[in-house]
Length: 208
Image (cartoon, rainbow, N blue to C red):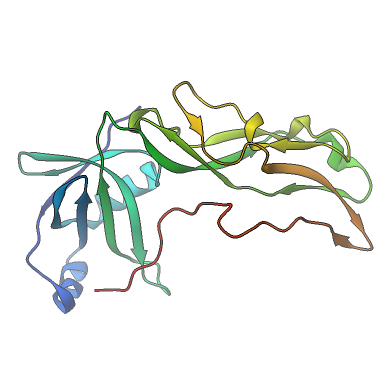
């Protein structure tokens, strides 16, 4: 797994003063968790954006502050609701030797033969799965081969998705990931997914 590092520095600007930081190309960040005092930091925006695009919410990285290094994962990315400009990032400190849980995105590949039938299409009912593993064993994404969907009764369950060695599935293995649906009268029949079944990464936070 490729190693990623964010170079950071201590931050004294708080509250409305963070706006001046952002105009100068600096993004406020926090590091917290794993029995350590929260760290109020800042990092150059452009390198930080490139790193965030590479790691997502599933790949661990290092936040380096002088000689100190903090092994972390992205917990929250705050962006402006209109311009999507990066405003703030929270990192959660973790241990290299302790397993963590993460929601891994699903990437759908292949062509479903069953979708060639008249009135048929593929329904993607799950777009991420919760797994547990050591941080360096977490996959960036999981591949779902929909070519196995060959008829109207075909479906793929969470427990049928291949996981790398050392990775354990937390999502209900009977949860439907993808299936063939038949349209009746122009409407698609879809099941109801209970709240809480699908984990979501990150969240929202107010601008400082």
